[in-house]
Image 1 (cartoon, rainbow, N blue to C red):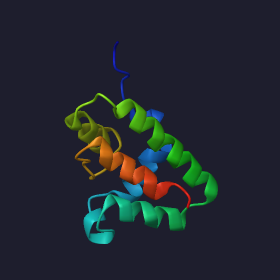
Image 2: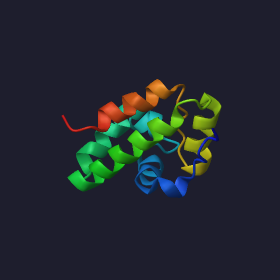
Image 3: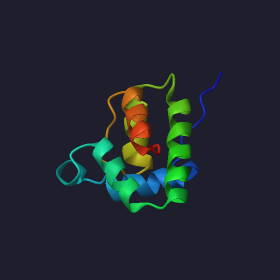
Length: 101
């Protein structure tokens, strides 16, 4: 079975989050991707959060079976982020931080 191509255009909310919260200074500003997600959650309205959660869930599904290198490349090149996840688990941690409590 062929892997679905990952395209940034399929993830507009994630692209916006990546560029706005996971930019080159995010480690200094937020400390971690999870802390950046918490900051986003404070700033975003419920619809923005819902859309981002949906897109991160979709990314987690298509990330299964992909290499970490592919995920890093997607996050940095396609989405314009400076966050380079080390595993699919880090994507799941991000998702957990974004879900409403």
